[in-house]
Image (cartoon, rainbow, N blue to C red; front, side, top):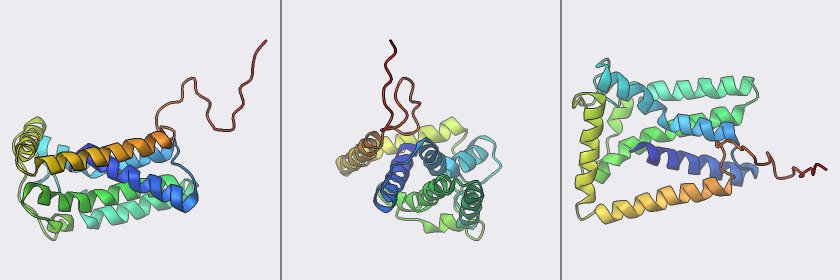
Amino acid sequence: MWPWEHLAVGYLVVALALRFGWHRSPDAWTAVAVAVGTQFADLVDKPLAWQFGVLESGTSVAHSIFVAVPLSVLIVAVAWYFDRTVVGAAFAVGYLLHLPADAMYGAVYGSGMDFGKLLWPVVTGPSSDYGSFFENFAFYLERLGRVLDSPRGLAIIAFEVTLLGSAFVVWVADGLPGIPRIGRPRGRNVRRVEHR
């Protein structure tokens, strides 16, 4: 899955859970936590595999449930200790949603779902080395272009527009959490004070 897709899925789940479960919107820390959580696995695995050659695949260590679940529990526990449980949970939800999304995304490209990649080191997937970080990125971008040019391209574009558009609408409705509020009141109940 592409980074913006992971972010959209994670933000929608966290924002809607907060809205319907706790009748509130994400604050800036929660929005940043879900953003980092949704990207975390790729921020670890991709550079270590593609740029530095330390890992065999761009979906290995941080994409493994044997790493993701304990790390998520630890992060929520630390956040709970500092009375920021929602922030820790937002990171964990974003991170844990990343894994099955990547496993199912192969179906978009016709290669089927691959949940085995989530079981590293018990199951090791094929190498995803197409050169440097940018060469790998170019490979996946070119592959996306081929799929978009295929008969199912229109369905993929419709999915992208719906997913990203929905996430954007919810984010705007939530008050753009994560964007600095320069010149804007911090809360809904803030009164304007006129200086004379």
